[in-house]
Length: 305
Image (tube, rainbow, N blue to C red; front, side, top):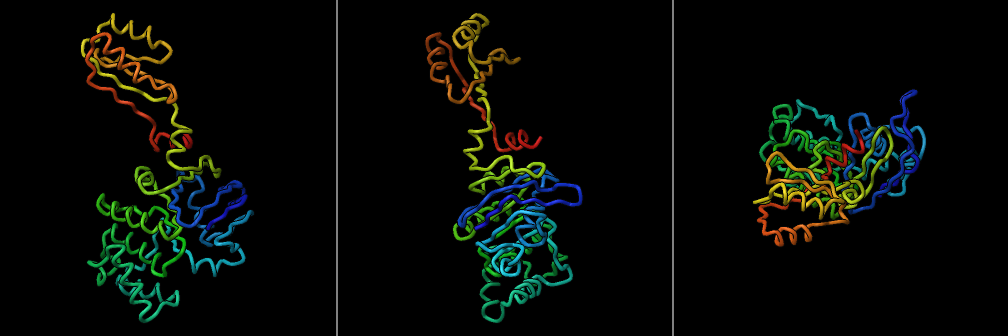
């Protein structure tokens, strides 16, 4: 598990992280979101022992990151945003070197190597130099290096950077499967990918945690009103006035297309059944009734704009 208590990180007079708290249990796949400069990468680097906190506590499996950093690095796999790789090394040699630094040799290395090569889809580039690989394959190599020692905790900073849509889907499925047996904390600027991959989302802004919960919980908490687009055949100005009298408590906007209107309402005041009854009673044909609620991008912009 990861437990963060009143974590603060300052760079001189600049407060990058401002007394944040959160905890993550094993078996969770958590998305960590924030704008550039929000404190996201700084927090991830502290969790992995690459930076020391100014104050506060960080516990990884009940071990304090400041006093047990070496032990913690044995159980954590980390893919940094910059993905530092030795471009002159062959992929096989890099993975062997990475495994050897973690005291994985002989048959243990063979088994670990075969597992990560299959998981990360690196069969076609094993004997290529890292520098000859595409950006997407380099990202996969970095992920394989983070996973070679079968860590209990995976911390991934922008893991799908540079991947094509098919590769993103493959890595998404890999991360979701890993989440069944590991704790996975990942950041990404691709919000649709976060929404499709994680169980829970933490959003940081200007060094503060501004949201924490499942996608559904955040939607309910921050989405605001529902916008319902109606497309109606035979909707005259007279019928529109009747409609406004019936549903005048809601915000009603007529579009340039005279047959379309938008009705805005709070989720708890869903009027769709009454609207349908109104259309039937007035012998109107409805071609479209399309509700539109906020998505993760809307929530992110609202909290970090």
